[in-house]
Length: 128
Image 1 (cartoon, rainbow, N blue to C red):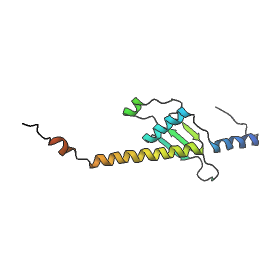
Image 2: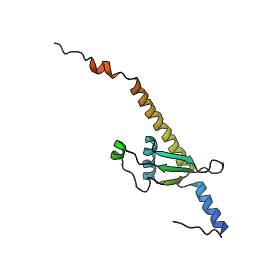
Image 3: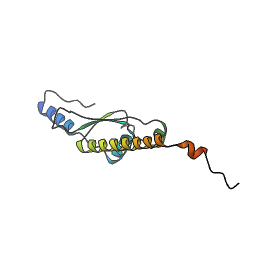
Image 4: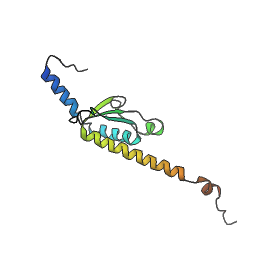
């Protein structure tokens, strides 16, 4: 763990400035985070909602369960930890989270409206 000498005010201010800016995930990590965001397995929040100059985001990634957990591979360094993202990547993940939610809600709505009974129970008999 990194330590900061609190007697050096300049160093402390520089570290706080870095946190306010956040960090970018590399391409592979961002793709993994985006998959989890689409699945709704992220918690995404502004780092400091009361500071208008702070555009960074807090990101927590949860391991998916069931089929998604078996089919998708994730970096163990990403999962179960809180990451501080820069504004651009945080906003993109928020968009992906919203898109995934809307797509899943649309599929569930279509499933709720579908009538399986008539289509599967009353099949036309073959010629005879």
